Image (cartoon, rainbow, N blue to C red; front, side, top):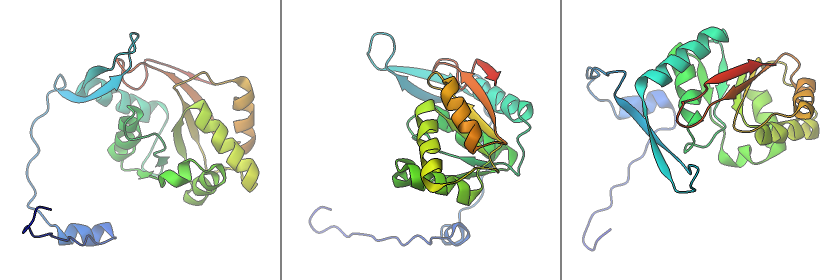
Amino acid sequence: PQRGSVVRVVDIPEMPTDALKAFAVEPKALPEVNPGDPAYITFTSGSTGEPKGIVTHHSPLVHFIEWHSQRHSLTRDSCFSLLSGLGHDPVYRDVFAPLSIGAKVIIPAQSTVIDPAALARWIHQHGITVIHLTPPLGKLIETGAKISGLQFNALRYLFWGGDALSSTLYEQIRAIAPNAVSVNFYGTTETPQAMAYHQL
């Protein structure tokens, strides 16, 4: 703060219901959104190695989420995890897919995500049913499950992307998540979320 300025301290209640009461605002009607309007910009390194901003419109994301929820019978009883970083485009799928169907999305602390045993315990404790993940993250989860002696019986779906899923890792994951279906997604930043999929 500059000299002579007053520092304002704001105490935000921990419970969401209390926070909403403490910072109540008048509800306003949301503006009309055209499917062709830009929704977000994601940056990719591109083939040249130079960062390139990809403008994505509302319609592909809405189309994907609707298809994803219907094709995989995702319901309000599903419990999603948000394991990808907030700077990566899967965050849109991880947040808007559950919220659009009234399901839960649970977000671990960053310290949990990088600790295999803690991550495995977190998945088990919260009864996570849907995870979008990369193979390296899958290996981390599998390692944590072995360390903690856990099996994820509540897990229904593992949606893979970002890298090739080996048959070895697939079999290792089946051993710790026997009720989970693995689905391979393929898509580039320019084609939001997935342009092809294969259920293993």
